[in-house]
Length: 122
Image (cartoon, rainbow, N blue to C red; front, side):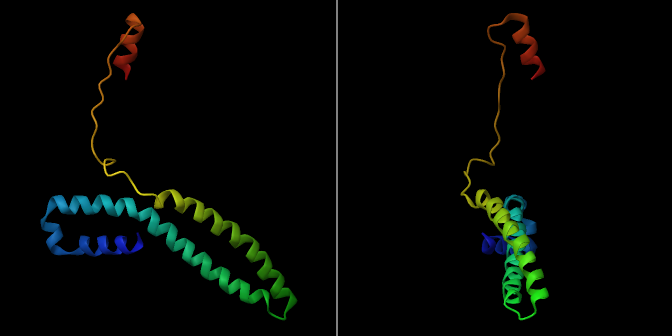
């Protein structure tokens, strides 16, 4: 998905895409759908890099620095787990019909005036 997001960004900046309004709108929708994945993946990568650095600091001979590193380790691991949980639903394949419009007709059924008022409110 990250590779596709980069590809979509390149296509959006292409002048030929700007001339094709339908393609530009389609790419814009896809970019909007991929933006949360890119954002969370960037945060996750940053936290994982920090975690790798903190794990190295835990092994340092200085006990005070090692203690601070362990505290930081305790903060980073839950953050990474939370970001992974946020990312999982975003990675599920989407239904191709999700972007289509729908027409909903609401009619008053049995229930007399109450049903008619409720249908009118909706």
